[in-house]
Image (cartoon, rainbow over all chains, first blue to last red; front, side, top):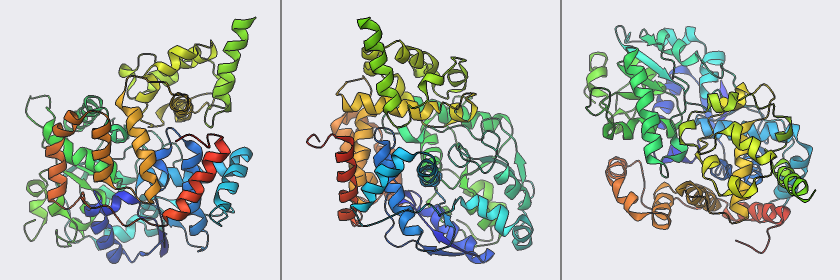
Length: 291
Length: 188
């Protein structure tokens, strides 16, 4: 299985632990990623106040990806949504298509509209398959109650998982031998986009999410691969009060990190030592070495 | 007659903005407001904002911080029975407010401007972007997030030095062209 890989800016900074674990598990599962050459920002940061600029920058990446006939995999949910969103807008909206064509021509590029943009979760479920994942598990994560957190953009608005109650990450969690815990806010927004500007609001959103997961019995959260959601939950919760009045200490691991633990990979290869939330206690029974 | 003309001018402006195309198809059912993740922070919730736009209340809409509370989670978009795409509609409102120089009381406008500038490098420089945002909005809030920043920096997750600019020439050419298409050539 070979794919073209679009990491996205955040995978080189706050997403480093996720990137490390993706590299590790793709080795085990036999997924080959060819990182796109000269990829740049997907345009997502400009989306709110300048959609045309956002679509044009996404289209630039798509135009480069089109030179290869592999599917384009974007692990970051925002990049995925923005790249796929640009593809959809360009195929539906004639006016924007003409404008973007003109903008791309300024850089000597053209997008014909043939790239297939996918999430890594989609690849894991539909190409790799749960059978293969199950066969690679060395440490059954039995007894671990995991809440799978999806964030918004991974399945909203374009899917392919259910836009409001996605299930694919739960399936992966179960195939690792862990128990997946349903909590209603599993695809609720964490507010990551406005983390800097509206702290009070984002704090409240994160608190609701984590409370909800706790109430439904999750002892650990297997977060989406989006570095924005992951960082927002992982780094900020220590400063947020839970229902009991103490600070949250919910272990947040990216789903790829959890897979790595089940595959018996060394925790340092999975970037687990870079997580801010207290992941060591809950994962210790399943690890041969300390984090 | 004059009032009706003015009202129509504003709703037309929103409908011409990317994302705002379907505003006239709204049936005011309120599913967007009911779905909105952040609705309690909105002065005018999404359904009301759409009604106000159609009533031509340009000043109130564009100087309110309401639309800027949209976290773009698309819950309204997947639920809207008329396929209005309210998230995109809010982006259209934000874009008009930004372009026409309205000053809604929210730091999010500054954040979005900073983010837009940061695209020019080709890749986002988290640290520089955050520093720039706090300097241009409220530096004290910057001090408050220091523990978070330190947690990231000490783990090597937030490089202080900027990444190498990638293809910034190409990016600049595209963004300049976009600006000239949008007809705001001389400004910013």
